[in-house]
Length: 410
Ligand SMILES: *Cc1c(COP(=O)(O)O)cnc(C)c1O
Image 1 (cartoon, protein in one colour):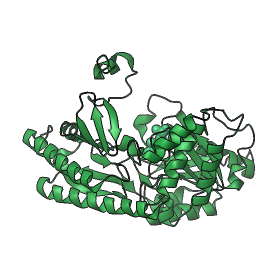
Image 2 (cartoon, protein in one colour; image 1 turned 45 degrees about the vertical axis):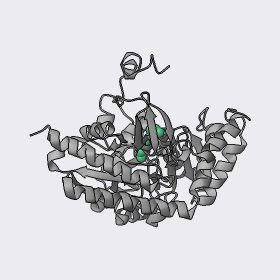
Image 3 (tube, helix red, strand yellow; image 1 turned 135 degrees about the vertical axis):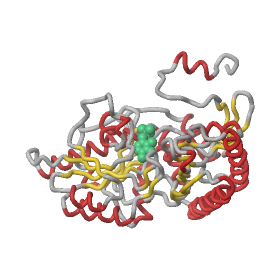
Image 4 (tube, helix red, strand yellow; image 1 turned 60 degrees about the horizontal axis):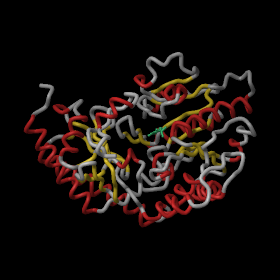
């Protein structure tokens, strides 16, 4: 198949909403990938914070293969054992009492936003106009019409208007603006504990606490979008557990399936009651294959040693990046939580994240960007230290290549 299929095929037969890399990976193992030509890469992209246990993790392989031998799909006309086991695990390990399964982050958020509206409607009454959703500039919540509308990046909703109404965007980490905006008309405040797509920017703990207090004061729900920050990414199962603030609704996806598509919305029994029979649903949500794999992911991540490893590897990567930066002066800031790491491009390389990604790929290293000015790393949570050292060596070579070429914009 590799003989006939190439990157050029993409331009012929795929809707052009992506601009994928020139190489097509065909095989993975741990934190390494191989392309059609057999070239090997270190994978610090991790499928955008999805492959939290790397490629071909034995526990995930076993879970998928065993479930594949039993039953693939039933729909929600029946429930199934993997979905129930996974929901029970998630409720044991978090604040949540009940779970709704979807297939992606956008769908988990769609469910969360609809539930927040419905809960306000149920409790404040249909005439209360308690339907305002407050969210933040730079935030990302998915690509459905509702989620691009709540998301704080204009470029994702421009051209798709009219979009759903009743949504207010505020600056992230602006305590005064938040204090002023939340009112009795607010049904939910929606935030990422760390802006992922928006540049790897962590919420100020006081900002998060204020959001919790204002939601309590005005009977609004606090919704944490942990699609990117969850599933162990920050060094705890969910980032809220480090912030000392508990949301009313939490969404999870990306790393939850470790590479198998799944999304989940977690909430309390009282709030869940507003999604009574027939009020919401999805055909594939709670699919046995997806839930069996996610259960293996959660069981593997429920390990203090693995979580401590995330924090240690985070320090290792950040200190190696800082040392590299001593030589190249490429970055003006290196930040993040756990293995969600952002490196802000310094002034003279501003806007050139894509070139850095291409140069890294040419040296056998897969990176991500978060906007044109930030290099983002979301490696496997169990990436071997040796792969981290090798990745930094390759990044060093890539940056040397770029310095030799010089910035495009001067
Ligand atoms: C990726 C992401 C989403 C969307 O998830 P999809 O699976 O692409 O629909 C939503 N919120 C955050 C914070 C994300 O990082």
